[in-house]
Length: 197
Image 1 (tube, rainbow, N blue to C red):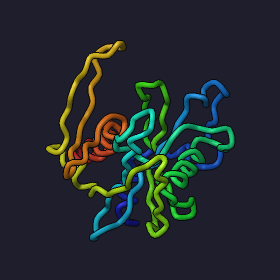
Image 2: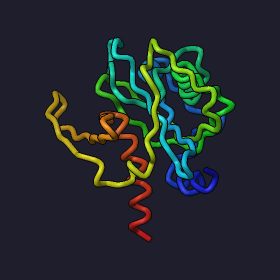
Image 3: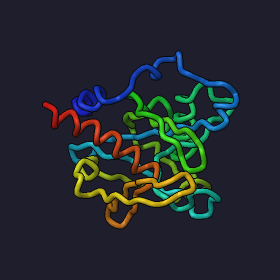
């Protein structure tokens, strides 16, 4: 995983990783959220850990997502939001998460500005699903996302105009929306650099 992290880190933003994190004004933080884009090592290759949200939730029920959620007042900063939400949803403590950097923020249809933090989970033995929020957690090999033949691009008309979104189908699990958008952002950063060499 160490060599893989060295491969990925150059494509990530780094200036929010230290403790001098942007916290924003109270109004901004009300609409702030964070997710963890978590890698782990399996069968000698990097995998991505995803969750399927509880089907009884009011928003985005049953959808595949990264661990994460909205900023809360007890969070010291937006990075802490990613740590806290990951622990609450899947039981992985901060000491077993090593952040590598973060991607550009994305805005959800509901108006939340989401910061995706990328890193690795060093120990999955603590995995414990909060069934109130998450139905299950599962892994997808990162190589699946790197293959552009596995993504399908769609477009839809919204009140804000035409929007494009990507869809992945991994063994029957449909990954789309913000989660797919974040995955594509990282893959495209890596591929763009490889093509320019």
